[in-house]
Length: 135
Image 1 (cartoon, rainbow, N blue to C red):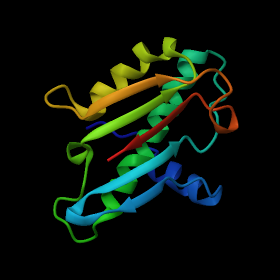
Image 2: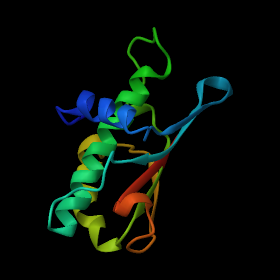
Image 3: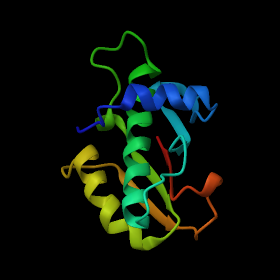
């Protein structure tokens, strides 16, 4: 799966801004990763480009979170281990653009199930356009 090259920098930035996703480990090796947000709202002027930029940063955070969930696992947890995704968009018009990146990361053969909800502009924290939960 395609992970942005700056994923370690994105994770470091999230640590510095205390904007880490919430991770809950459950029995049987299951876990829930919630409140995945880009470390900051994207400054790109085009709303669709900005939403896609935020989504790619979220994917970088998810990849880093998954890889660190169960130290010692070989191979480490990855996109292939995700069972479902809840995707929250400030505007449903961003869906088409983000879906291309979603398919690149999660694949097209048996990707995780997904619910996508348009929550309205300004509803997500810090003016962000995308938020994600997954398990």
